[in-house]
Image 1: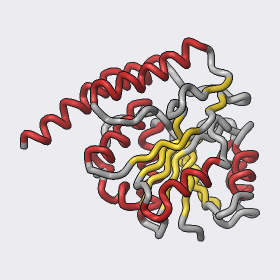
Image 2: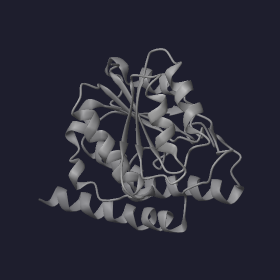
Image 3: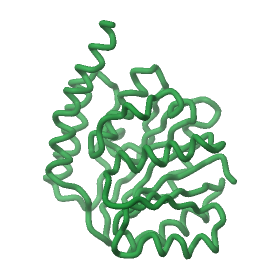
Length: 241
């Protein structure tokens, strides 16, 4: 067992899951992987179960129904904390995050240099490939909006490629994390920042998926829009107590 665990939520990712797992398991240092599958009707979980015969450090949690990105990660975090993992990662299954960048995120946290490392699309400008301009602008200005409202000095607050040290996830009250969609990523970074953890952004190139279907929707963006205001109000209330 490695001290590093990559959590990958899946829903209908049969085109990508085997390829991305093979890349991760080829990396050095070694990473364990936990797939959290939300009842994918396309057989994603069956592919993972078959690969478990080949990779003893591949694990799966199967859930019934599409329960949301945030709840998938919370389930994964709790699974990791029940074991001895020191570094816990979030990443997508669709190759929008380059698995080889896991090594760079780990290096950013190793040795106590950071408590949370974010694979950032906007740390050095805009590093996004194959997105339509409208989506790039929405994502970029969403992060600008988060910085403005919260005061958090993170350029890519909605990023879903993250390394957490164990201490961060042990300190955040995971049962009180409110959001399930796009705003989940903002809430986790905001919580770590408010708790005084060191956050480092690692520049990456984000490439839109070429296989499978995106899970983004208008409702996800609406949750993020109003969620940021909610986080700000909740933070202010805590200071007053």
